[in-house]
Amino acid sequence: MKRARLILNPISGDEQPNPMKLLEIVAALEAAEIRVDLTFTSPERSATEIAQQAVEEGYDMVIVGGGDGTVSEVAKGLLYAPIPLGILPIGTYNNIARSLNLPTDLTEACQVLSHGQVSAIDVGQANGEHYFFEAAGIGLDAALFPLGEEIKGGQWARLLQVAQLAIGFKPQRIRILLDRSIREAKLRSTNYPRFLRRRKALDRRELRFSVLLVVVANGPYYGAGFAVAPEARVDDGLLTVSVFRKFSKWELLRHFWAISRGQYHYSPRIETYHVAELQVLSPDAPLLVHVDGFPIGMLPMTFKVLKQALKVFIPPVAATSNESIVVSQSL
Image 1 (cartoon, rainbow, N blue to C red):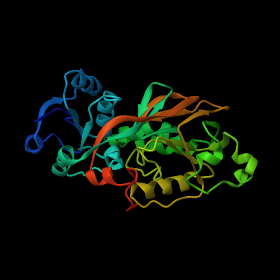
Image 2 (image 1 turned 180 degrees about the vertical axis):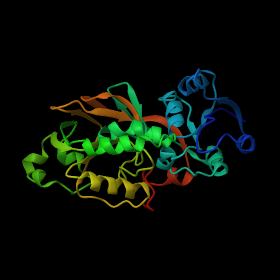
Image 3 (image 1 turned 135 degrees about the horizontal axis):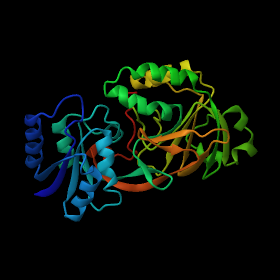
Image 4 (image 1 turned 90 degrees about the horizontal axis):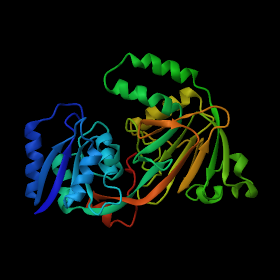
């Protein structure tokens, strides 16, 4: 039998841990000839450390049961590791699992670990030290994300503070330095803003905007299930940069409301670029930055993709397809 370290977050999702469900998970894995040693996350010992120790102890795989926060912490301990990560999505939004087309049914998710394929996916990195598996955000959403997490935890009084912060936030000037020409960065799209339609402009590597926010995405989803970058692929060796300019705050709110409900409608005012590395600077005022919802400081900031840095289990259909792992076409 294969040996696996199973790491669970006992407070993931909306419900308290169900002992019968835990026994069901262990039984399903053992039926698939995967023998697990269970460890719960705790404040005293990080999930990253548990995953790193599992590699040292010679396990065949690490399995994580939890939401995106727990999955990310475990994944950090497995970057460039020789063993794969298996995901049991039992969190609230499960953005990473959705990006990998993993089933949310626990029995089916266990089957992926026994009959699925191992694929190497990309990981985002900010300033050489902060890793992200969903996306990094600059500007308005970086200011709002910590409050959103508090609201998610039941602190509804923060709603008024969110509204006040959003109303008072002004578009800010930024510079984006790309690792390739604008023409190359927009190969997947013919949607050029008017000021970039001249041939000479397309050969530049620098962009200057006044924006409400910029998203640097490794995968399609982030936050509260937002399909913020539906063109993003987790295995293409590129980051997807979405620039939100010329949006009123009401239009931005409507856009995020729509994509949170799976009703994605492409807006021509979202300018999208695909690069392996970029630097973002703010000449006027410092702007907050977050990665996967965790504040990491202010601009300037350099973002890069770590190609094929993490081995994961994915469903066999996705692995044998000639296409990359993509966001669901039902959007």
